[in-house]
Length: 189
Image (cartoon, rainbow, N blue to C red; front, top):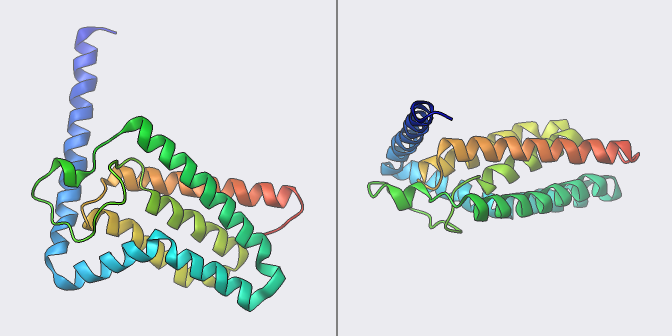
């Protein structure tokens, strides 16, 4: 690779990184308003898993055995997602925006040191895909919540937009693969 081409690529990467940080800083300004701080902090904490555990429990209580395949697929997608994002975070080691940009307002402490990809978004999208594949009527609950979780990562200054997009893409891919594998095995979700 020529030195000129390498400089061009590095300049392009630097520009994208600056845009990523600027978008996070812009989103984080919403954190100055009390209602935003409260809403997004709650979305983040519920997105730690509590909302999804409650959903799985509710499905089992309401539907009984009929919900077991969906809950198992959610658990498998969640487990694989956790392993994947932990592996990526340890390998890529991208610092969180709150560690790079001193001007961000933090109201929720990060769960770990690294940023890429967003595990909260990965799980929110994965569980929403599986839940709506199982019970489409849940879409009006799970998708707005998944959106709040994803947006909370930016507003709270914990992730860059590229982290959130990557987490969402990974979550969707994992969930659709898990649903497809279950269906191919004769276990419709």
